[in-house]
Amino acid sequence: KGTGWYYYYTSLSRSFLKGDKLSVSIGAYNFLEKYRDYRSTSWAEGVYTSNSVSRSPARSFSISVSWRFGEMKAQIKKAERGISNDDVKSGGGSGGNGDN
Image (tube, rainbow, N blue to C red; front, side, top):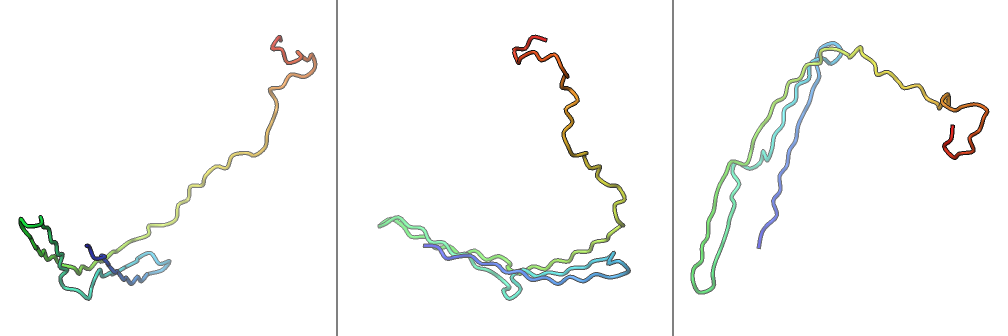
């Protein structure tokens, strides 16, 4: 029988300088727990039982810094819309049998 795992994360972000060019974010994962224990039991009926516990650090912190260099000046060329049937022959009419 297993138990559910849960994790939690929170962060704060702030922008600085003209045009919000500099952004700084700090975050914390599982900040209320110093360690997390993982328990495991295995057995073979009438042969053995094994219990184990492993412990690993649960909390971690992060910091992120980003810089915006400017705006992109390039623009995407838009395709011309519409259908032009300039490949259709006028007159003659082959009757659709492929003879031209």
